Structure formats: C-alpha cells, structure tokens
Length: 142
Image (cartoon, rainbow, N blue to C red; front, side, top):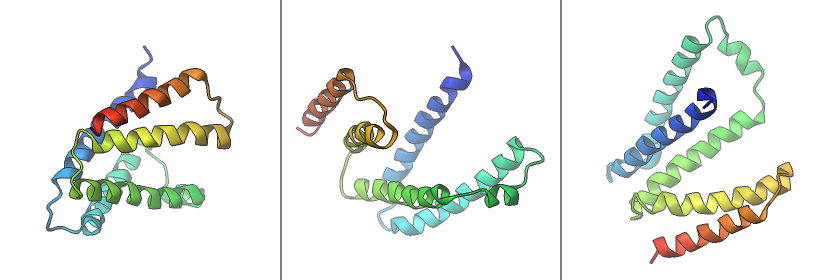
C-alpha cells in the first residue's frame, strides 16, 4: 500500500465529515454568507501557516505571481459549495441524504465532463455505476 496515494482520500473523508456536521449545525439565526466570512478567514490563516510550515524557505508572494484564473474561479466555486451546503441543510435536507443526492448527481456530471473536456473513457462499467447511482437516489428519496 502506497501511503502517499491514499492519505489524501482519508483527509478528504475526515474533512468532509466535519464539513457537513458544521454546515448542518450552523445556527438558524446566522446568515450563511456571514458565517463564511469567518470560515474563509480561518481558512486563509490555516493555509498560510501550513504553507510556511510545509514549504520552508518558500515565498507566498512568489507563488501568487504564478497563479492563473483557476485559483480565482476555485474561490468562487468553494463559496458556492459551502453556501449551497448550508442552505441545503437549512432547507431541511438530512445529513444522510443531502450529500448523497448532490454527490451522486455530481459523480454523473463528472463522468460526462471528463469525457468531453479531458477525453477520459466512458466504459460500460461506469455506465452501470450511473444506473446504480440513479437507483440509489430513487431508494434514498422514497
């Protein structure tokens, strides 16, 4: 087993667990976008600290000069993801179905985006997975 291959998946899963718990626990009286201003402040400080810790001798300013449009669009996408999750839970979605529904729809969309944008193959196995995902959605939403 190659640890460097698998640890990011563990980090994503653990982070997503906390992400969804925190999104669902956001107080009703707090506007989601106000909460996100604190979230991004904490995220910026944590990112800067981790950069300095893990990239000793590096220069954030030098890194910033190499940024292209993806970093800026990613910022907008992250706001959409986080605000959408908070609003999803405020609208009444449950912890055990909201993420499953949007995750399944996302997985299906990414199969086709991968095909059209990056020429990744669509196999019969993947199409079978899409059918199973759709069946799962039907069962979850009963």
